[in-house]
Length: 97
Image 1 (spheres, rainbow, N blue to C red):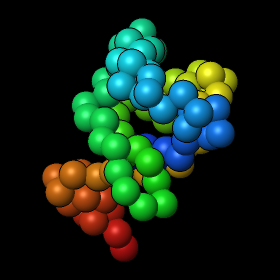
Image 2: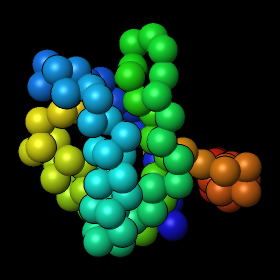
Image 3: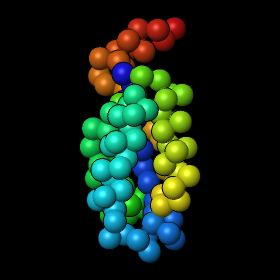
């Protein structure tokens, strides 16, 4: 499974209903499971982003479908980073010419 760091910013709708943010995180976990992804951690953060989430998914298409489904709900906008473990990075470096 690939690991992703998903950074989120509340939309106007999301901040207006911020009291529901923990419930929305639980809904995200359910949506992830149905999509074949695993929501490993959800953090609420200070700074430019309001949320940082660690997600494992079998491929980019699975994660993209999940995040499009989340985006349709209108509470958060996301940016996604593909994350590599040290072991995965060692494999990548082995391919560098």
